[in-house]
Image (cartoon, rainbow, N blue to C red; front, top):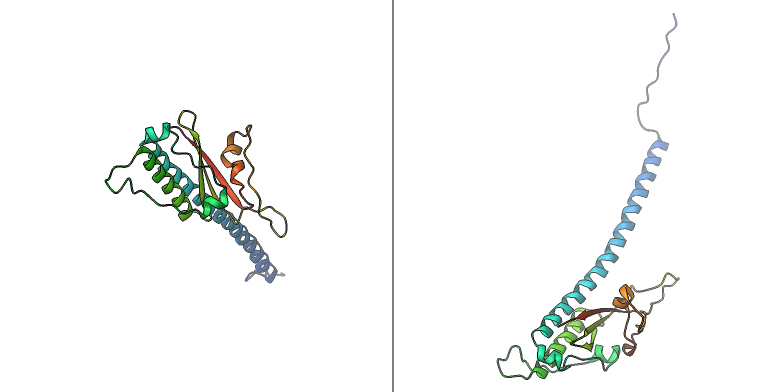
Length: 195
């Protein structure tokens, strides 16, 4: 009688080890790509949240001064982006001093708060206010975004669309007013406030 010897595999071969390392490397590269995208979206989300907080605070201020709103004291759209970004303001301290302020002075303080807050919490931040109390005030918050680039090599800063009379929807929320003259790299976020 003849017996066959059966050989058992005692360990992984070098090829199997290399294949498993390759598969694991591809998985880790995929995870790294997802992480980079998540960081980019997180930054965009952070900017949008800061803009929304700033505009929400300003909306409450307008609603607490209806006379100033109906008199048109909340308009601030006479300067372009560069001028608003560099502007400095003097506050009347109407909300904190306890002294008497007119509705126009309160509105001036509210605009001061809006613009200085945009300047402080957003990179290259600026703000404009247009409109009226019956149709609503359009608040445009502008900020510089170094990642607002195209897909060319090397990447080039993009320019936000300029608003026109026919701009609506999402395009309207992200376009810059004509008078703002926003340079490349500046994003605009627009909101309507009805007092």
